[in-house]
Image (cartoon, rainbow, N blue to C red):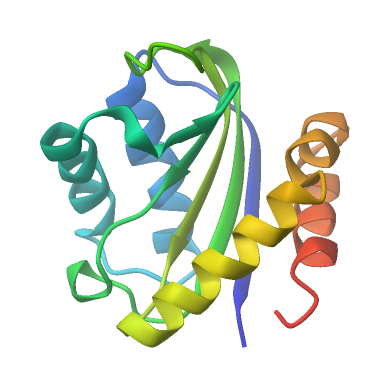
Length: 145
């Protein structure tokens, strides 16, 4: 069973705070351990802004052994967009985070999210009027969750 969570109008002064606040939603939901948000920041520090997948959208994650306790997916809409340093897709206003307890689930969850994004998930999340609608749109996009 996938843990689905969302938070709207999240403040962030920069990309680090955006990543920390987004991954913290998974911690708050019980899907990730306390160190997971910091591990997600390290992914960007070590690999650059590749997590910014498309205009305004970042996919926050770290390796399963960095604190994934369950399969979890969260959507966060920022109160103010932030710059990640991506040459084409900044600024980011919408972040999806996911965590998994093992590599197989990691690949499967990533694949499911990719299909949902290709089917317009980001637009539906941006159109959601509040946190509960964000969560509902995410749950609808991940029917096996």
